[in-house]
Amino acid sequence: MKGYFFALVLALSSGCTTLGTEITSEDNHVTMPHYSFVLPADQRWHIKRADEKHEAVIITRKMGSILLQIKVFRNPILDKEMQANSAKAVADDYRQLERRIMIEQGVNKGLYNLKDVKMDEEVIGNKTFYTMNYTITDNSGIQRAGLYLYFHKPNNNDYFIMAHYSETIPTSALLEKTYKPDFLKILESLAISE
Image 1 (cartoon, helix red, strand yellow):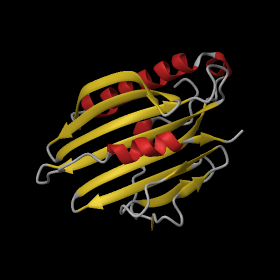
Image 2: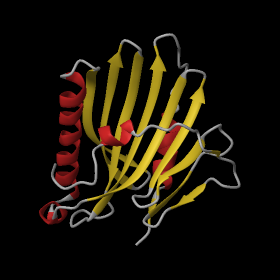
Image 3: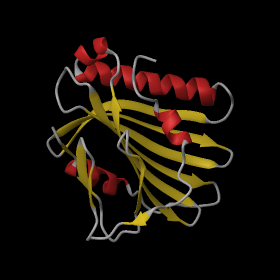
């Protein structure tokens, strides 16, 4: 690894055994030491602060056997040379690392199939996110997911915000609509604290 705190695969494996606190209009503003955002209120989303040291937040909504999940982390860039690179160069490196880990630790071991991988840049509100959208399938179902990286400066960053959205749908279930617009609203409200 090139000096990041952790890769997404490791973050996803931590899971969420409890849903956490339901989000209402009275407590839908999340403030961490380096960032803040606003959550959709009264929509059956739940929040759990998973790791204060790394400012990790897990937002979950269960609909029967369907699991919708949003994870937001502050991901330090530990390598000094990587810190000096442009945000795009670091994002490209990180997304390639994530893709390689998913292939090596999942696809090559026969755990799941990875398809529809698309890396892009997306402007949400006034912020540019470096994205990687993909689909994972196995015998139990499908997961549609998106990784969104935000850097608050064009270069010389010592961290970035990593946001991940996933819809995990068992083969026996049907998700009638996507809830990704809720995730995009969170990203639109994202603010960095200096």
